[in-house]
Image 1 (tube, chains in turn green, brown):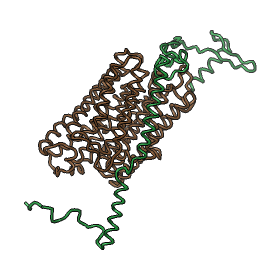
Image 2 (cartoon, chains in turn brown, orange; image 1 turned 90 degrees about the vertical axis):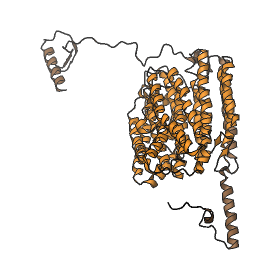
Image 3 (cartoon, one colour; image 1 turned 60 degrees about the vertical axis):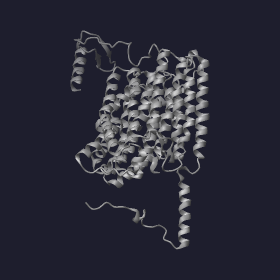
Image 4 (cartoon, helix red, strand yellow; image 1 turned 180 degrees about the vertical axis):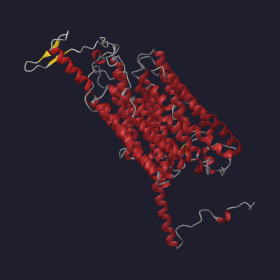
Length: 150
Length: 459
């Protein structure tokens, strides 16, 4: 930064003193300020203006020019239209609509409600008979055969 | 079950015998019809699942994954229709056949009753995927990507084969239902440790676990869109599904053997999320985000609690749909600008407002925004991990934060801001692309309302 400012000052000063061989780019009318070209020799390097990656691919064409109702499926407009209709009909109207209805009306998924009703019945029955609600043994201890201690 | 497998297999003659102009219409329509048939598997009547025959068994865990597989085939066909246009008709039909073969192999994989049948089909799915990646990928790196994908998985699977044969000979059967009733206790011994590793490593590599995840960014990035979709949505979940099935015979050794893998998953998910923040390649970002989400699933399956299994199943389905959606969105970008770099096309919301809606919804579900099913999965996993060890909340919380960061980074870089001035040839969104996104978002949104179907078999 400082070097640039110094070179700028040097260039302006030498330009004012008429020591610059290259022309001035700008000369102020109100002061002695000038802008001169850089005296450093630099190879003229301009990047090529074609062949950037961001440039549109010449093989890409605007599909909407040939078929303004292009749906993205096929270049033939009839096939394109049919494909769009088929996807919408089978995909949305049949699978999503019927499938969602099916899944919404599945009775008692995983038998959760049945399990709750059964438990309530058992609790009611047990409390009426005076038994404890649940035994602490899941399995009958007389039926478990333990191996001998080896 | 045959009513799903035979029609899927019959899609192959349909492809080859259809006239060239009707191929896509026929196959797409019939694959949607197979979906309606397969919905019946979602009617799970009890906690033991549907024992359909001696070879096929669908429980609530399998049913959601099978539905995802079958739902994904028409979506893959929709996504590929544009980039395959330039190939010969023979190649188009070959590509469609690869996708159909993959689906036909994946359906029995998720419903296999025997672990050996599951293993054979698990390996068989590698072949069509390898063909899709190496033949129809776009860059020259696809060859190395295919090699990484194949050999990483094979290195884990050969020990799995040996372990399954050994368990078969000691137990007499590898039937998943019988194994739940068997009394096979793995005691602490060196050979049992190696048996545990042999069983689990194949699925860890598939998930992928953080240390062995290198195949995933390569394979996902180099694959064509259908390959990326099926990889991200289904093939990763094969690992999770396999781990859940095998965990019944690997008790009680899992309690001690799981530690290094839980550690790797928890650390790995933060690392891969952080890598996402530094990605310039859009597909690579989504690939690493898959690693991060699946690391949560691995950690959940390792701790083996009912809530963590629910969370793992929910997250697998949710991530399948979300990741596939994000890959499709990235592909719409790629087809227009022929580059995967994110900063090449910014401010796309101005050019494609409806697609920006899907970018927005996809990014929001990716960062597990309530009330999406991604959140249900992540929340259940976080809670169960916290109850397993209090310290994990720090790691999981950091991951949720970084996930939000990179999802929003991806959204803001591609959608917000000013449109890049050099992009002058962006065609408007095709109906096909918008339909594809809608078909991803609709199940995601509907499952939000009724998530009991994806909660797995511990619901």
